[in-house]
Amino acid sequence: MLQTAIYFLCLIPSIVFCYTRPVPKVRLIASLLCIAVTWFLIVRFTVRYNGPNVFDEAYADVIWGGANGNWGYSQMLLTWAVVAMVWSHEAPCAYQFFGVLGAMSASFLVYTPFKTPSSTKL
Image 1 (cartoon, rainbow, N blue to C red):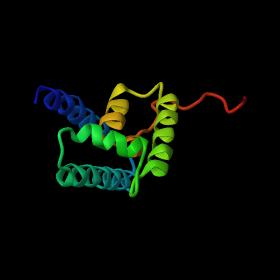
Image 2 (cartoon, rainbow, N blue to C red):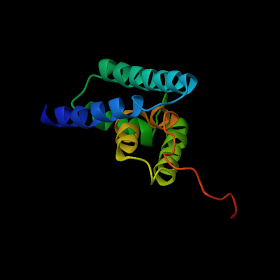
Image 3 (cartoon, one colour):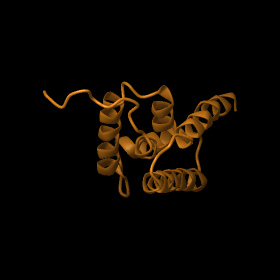
Image 4 (cartoon, rainbow, N blue to C red):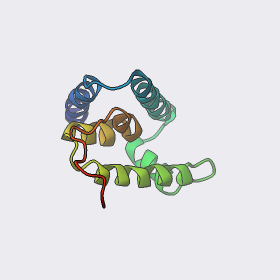
């Protein structure tokens, strides 16, 4: 129970921070849709699971898949998450917390860099 409380104490302020930044409505709506779909799937898996440890079972489904596993999709999403973390090194940590604990795609849809490059030369 303490772990769950800590999880949400990190996630909720991060979501609030990210969603209170100025961002175009289309990106905000897309972000809300991404987090809704992500958490719908998480909650559905959790409710349907009957066993000792739902986290371990979810991790196994992501890694090994199985008859109805999601290995290919999960690996593509995890690869995108690593790239997003590297690209966002200058972003406030709230975007990383929201991404890792909530939904990476939802987090970075609402991210707008604070500074623009001074030059486009490489």
